[in-house]
Image 1 (spheres, each protein chain N blue to C red):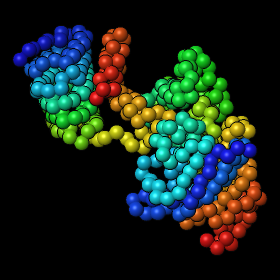
Image 2 (image 1 turned 135 degrees about the vertical axis):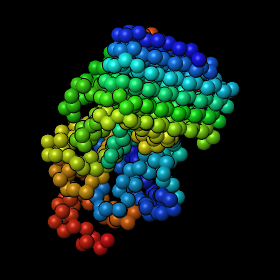
Image 3 (image 1 turned 120 degrees about the vertical axis):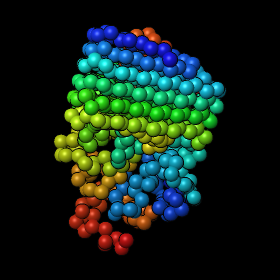
Image 4 (image 1 turned 90 degrees about the vertical axis):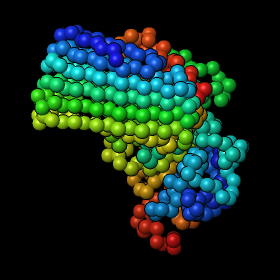
Length: 249
Length: 216
């Protein structure tokens, strides 16, 4: 399988404090990876750095995404290349409607790929179709982005946007936090339905529970800014039973 | 000073689009409804002073004031509003929005007076200011004078810059910085445009504001 993402010795800091201390990771097409680890290990930082969050400074290392130097791209170009970050806390944007926001995002991606803007009727049809994937109500169109959404609705809305944009690599940062069991099932079903041979997923999670629904090919344990252990899906059960201590971290 | 009388049960809208300095007084008779729109975006230099006085002289009056100031260049603008609720059962709303860039200066003072006879009043004033440059300044002095006891009255004022977390969220979905910024600023401005009755005029204004913003 083709390599989608290749991270080599990645170091990153925020306000002078080094959070990532030499990450190495390769993700190929068709794979699902999960990153677990104790609080403060740097899991969310890894997602934010890959997405191009301006608060983080990369101090060392390189990241290649689809054969290109990811770190030299501005955040929006990374998105248009097909990198999607589902936010742990999706941002509320009052006054900006979901329709306008998604149309702009989709058309920017299409323009980047040299395609014409999508026709209005096709766009609305696509919205309807993708909303069904996460069982979201039809009223979504007229609502402002995430404004007044419950925790579960915000997470579903992230997966809805992922479905609209069809990214090649989706980094899902604690997509399971704050979800009841029904919402978790819907979100997980959405992620599974979107998983294809030519895309990949990086799950960031605290809990093994999510991995019962979305089964990863690889699990990595992140601690103190480094991947200290990697294994197959069976590692989740082991971590659930024994915690992280047996890894001497 | 120019004086307007809004007769009993009359409903009037006034739109002031890029006006020169003005001193206005509106007197409202019983049961009248007045809506004022001040939209100021075209200047890049000079100075304008606006004074708007509204007196609710009869009961059951409604007053809405919308002020959208998009101040650029070295333009300076002063806006003073004063709504006097002289009698009871009145309603007033003020939506005051400033977007400032370059070295523009804005100065807003808003006063709402609830006289001793003005019971059962519902009065709200909301002022929000968005600074797009480090050299633009806004001075704001919202004020409530309440002499009646059975009233609902509130005011709020905030000044800030664009929400960085919203900008990053939008960029993460593929929007460029300027596209995300324009969308956020336009939605901020639209609060003063949406209530305009004429759809074509509303769309025209949003379009004009959008093209100015793109070149700002």
